[in-house]
Image 1 (cartoon, rainbow, N blue to C red):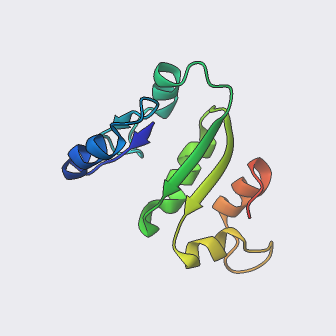
Image 2: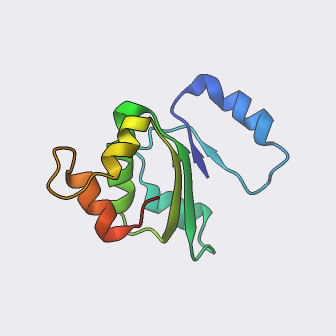
Length: 112
């Protein structure tokens, strides 16, 4: 399952991913999508989900928080992000960069 907000990319993704019957492209803003409903509909047989994404800088934190707040069987994340965001996600307690996203990650997931 892949989310893409840009309507212009949907035909490209449909063509590129056509050989794979295990990929569904959803043209929707992932920040507004009911991801749990899509998981229930498209991935009902999956016990664990791996999130793989290339996240834009300005919405990396909202997307990750949104995913963490839902009751999804996420087994792990492989995420491409801007270097500065990655550094923030690895900030230590008591540093200026430490914040809500790091706290959530430390409780729910192990980051590398």
